[in-house]
Image 1: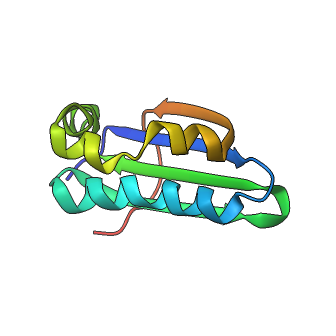
Image 2 (image 1 turned 60 degrees about the vertical axis):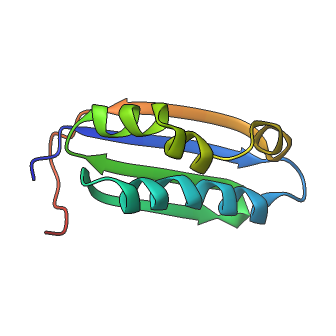
Length: 105
């Protein structure tokens, strides 16, 4: 599978909510991987000292993620909007095109 799209996000948690941020950041990429055939690799990385959670998911095509998130299953797996707003202090999202690297497979 030749990856053409990587989603990456960088989030920080509100005070006392770091473990909740890790929990809500972990579920969507795991569900996307479980429920689609287009995920090449994903990782959720946490740095408690800097209050930072990074998510990256590399896929065959951006439509893999977009189509999934538009589906009822994808929407239900993405999390509760009110809870997300209560936990996340800052959020940045990046839509990337892979140009170099090594992925498993």
